[in-house]
Amino acid sequence: MDSKNDYLGLTDDENNNNNNNNKDYDENNNNINNDETTTATTEDTSFSIMDSYELNKNTPDIDNNTCIELSDDDGNMNDKSTSFHDYSLSSSSSPMHGINYQQSPQKLRSKPLPVIPTIEELTDLDPDLMRLATTSSNITATDGISLNDGNKNNLLPTKLEKVRVTVQYVPLIKTTDEKMLEMMRLMSEPIKAILMENDPFDKLLQYFCGKKYLKKEDVILVYEGIPVMLRATPQSLNMITGVKAKNLMKAYLKDDYEKQEREKSENLKRRLEETPFDDKFIKRLEQTQPSEPVESESFILIKLRGKNNEDTNMRVKQTTSLRTIVNRYSELKVLPNDVATKIRLSFDGEDLSLDDTIGDTELEDEDVVEVIIS
Image (cartoon, rainbow, N blue to C red):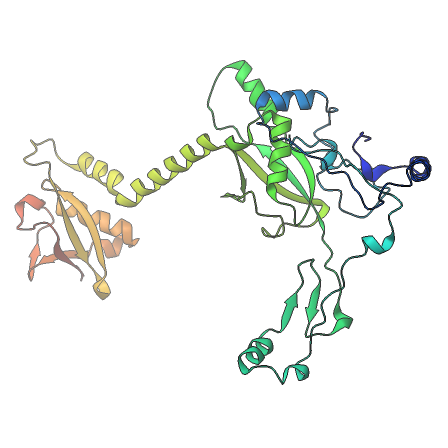
């Protein structure tokens, strides 16, 4: 896809025209210093949804199945894939100015790497410096070149890989309005993009919000259920590299996502505070009781101590029969019927009648009842 700012896609004819224009420029301006360059200045402007809309009106429509490449740093001059600079939504971006295509290669040459002395050459150093030098087995240069123990034969540049990422908007709003449902369906259509593995996700979010007409500060990216910081990179998240890889990120509105997480946390906290079988067990106990006036609605906690001093906690009412407690204990322990019929309950060394209720006994809150299988 062509664009007026696509500097990586110059054809041979365009390169020849640029060279001829530069030669005419040098002949007519001999007094101009060749090292002088023009500096482009930009103005910081606030970016709103309307600005995004105006920019995207001039952006060619791209099929959702098309994978957009947000980084053109691949060294391939003939690569015709769409780059991030073609459809950049940043208000501070500006075209390139003052490029001298005939600039001497010596000026473009990077600075030589510093010479790393060997351990033998450090013997005359201060002992503290010597200790620091010997503890550093690897020194990594800022440009991604690894220096291993001063061996210049191992100076190999680190090659960065491309990463394909799919971003899908997830609406959390519940509505029955047809227009809203249609809008959410369009918003949920995924957008595919290609990043370099060291590109920050800020670039991806900026592009995504521009295509969906959303404010960047209102959207949060989530990967594998965890919110992602915008300065993180695909490499830091160990994403699968390659232009055919499948890395799915989900986008939410921040307010909706935070509300959902709070509700999940509250529900989990409420479950932990409740006894797992409280509701079902109490309901079953109420159904098995005779239709007698209830003397007390208060519950007490008793501990049924079985074999190997293993305790089973139960919340019971004063009207709960001991036989019902035995039946419930047999269900929890998955005891066969022939064993369940042999269960006896004992409190303070005395057997309890299974026909009695809790109110008929002297059991109090947190008392221990022994379970005996004869």
